Figure 1 (cartoon, rainbow, N blue to C red):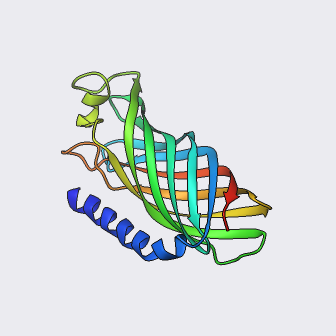
Figure 2 (cartoon, helix red, strand yellow):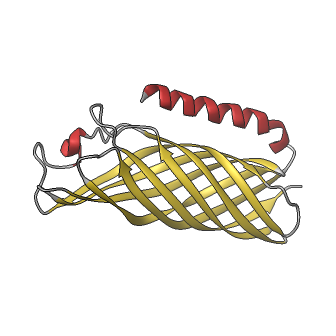
Length: 207
């Protein structure tokens, strides 16, 4: 787990280091995004796991032109439905998520597609379990499969967006895949995998 987390952090740092000079010469866009997560837990081989939708939203700053840097601050809810012979229910976590992305926009016209990649760190604000029959062990999230819910969750991100520029305003839609690299428990391979789809709006400043 530690090597995967370090590898993700190093990769993000290298990408952002390469785009830094280009981003410093561009425009600044400040905006907001609101949408949905479609999430699941991987690594729970003894359970039937189904995806569930939950809300995601927050603010971002995009700095640059053709190549840019985009830090974000998001509220992200992730939920998965679980079933086994002994239990059925759901496991849900709420996070403050801090993505850091490198963005490439190949076109300069009013309709601008973009591709991006990066990573995120997520910090839990709330956790909830809802089961018809609770699993063995302590009740609540901290006893759920030995989950350490106070541990920050790290993820790699790839995605794309399409924006329409209307003067200084930009409206668009964004889709991304988040691949968790932090296990929920030291003795388990369970980690979050989730798609996010969101609508975005921003206003630009500078050149």
